[in-house]
Image (cartoon, rainbow, N blue to C red; front, side, top):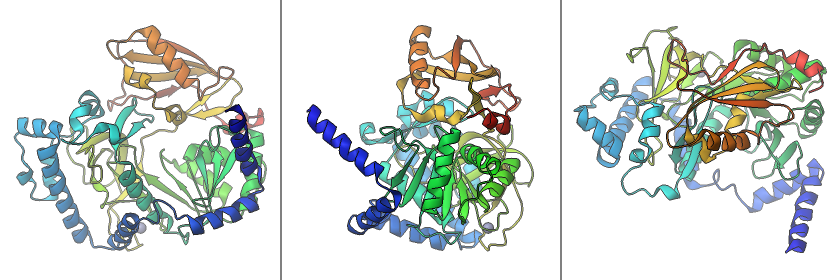
Length: 482
Ligand SMILES: [Zn+2]
């Protein structure tokens, strides 16, 4: 067996070591003989065609489509999903009460805690949980939560909405793209890889050292991607590297980002560094809301086909006026194996109140203020985006009720934990140390675990997942050799 394993590794390593032009040519051949499993499926093509047309509907047409979807969803939830059946009966609401879109306000909203405490009740009758994709949500605003999805359907919907936005530049589906949002190749430890199925250059956001970023710049120059895609935090770190070293990338049609809020200063820096416009989007693992910025860059268009998007005030009353902060509450139309209806996010947004000159009628969000940019700072000064902590699905996350990281000096982190009942401090510490250690090396970070009875919340009732006391200056950190 050892011989076979060695041979396979050799082949693997050989393939990965081929020059990029050879790998690109092999990728082109592969795509001709073996179509993309999702992009070339009939279901994806049909759904994407639908989205291409629906973006030009009038607001009335879109709202009438939304009402039909909502009525269908609430009926399904009432008849098939134990949680909604129970709660709607308690609150005396019935699917037939939903006569217009605003009637969604008759339905109680749900929180992460509701879902976490009754997770099995959110699975519809007759659905076998073991066949579903488990997605663990993370982020800056709370502790992880398991969400169940149908793998094909979930990928199809997300990809269709992303592709629609990308085509708002003159990017085409199989055009070259470079992504900076994951670890491409744990096996060979290389900082980049080529995904021939999608004609995609994958750059590692896990280990953005000076030498790796120099390699990114070289390989991007060879590859000449039409667009770049990534986390704002990672794009920013690389952007500062480009500016610092006076490196100009080949012309790009756009930089696409999501998963974190994009801040104005950060945007200006990235647009200058990559010398093109940014196209941010808003979404979440729970798949309840989606919004994307178009080529006119006047804010985010709410994706009305994706679900019902609401902004609510502190009393959970709907906000309709522009420039008023509200909490995002979303109802996704597309997760029939775990429907989330009026699900409260911890993100804060504001309506713009303006109509976009692109001609699409979907209402606009001016900005999203939540998901505050947060990093850990290692002993060496290296920055690590908070969200990389959420790379795993380890069961230890379910043993924690609330958690907050506090950092007051470089390389020193305090993890405050409100532990869930029935587990010991020792068990949680041991498992968490091992899990967090996968992304935070012991050389760079020392973590002190403290168990507490409760967490201090902000005036909005929000738990800041990282309380970062250190000022973060990218230039200084870069100069120190990271
Ligand atoms: Zn527009």
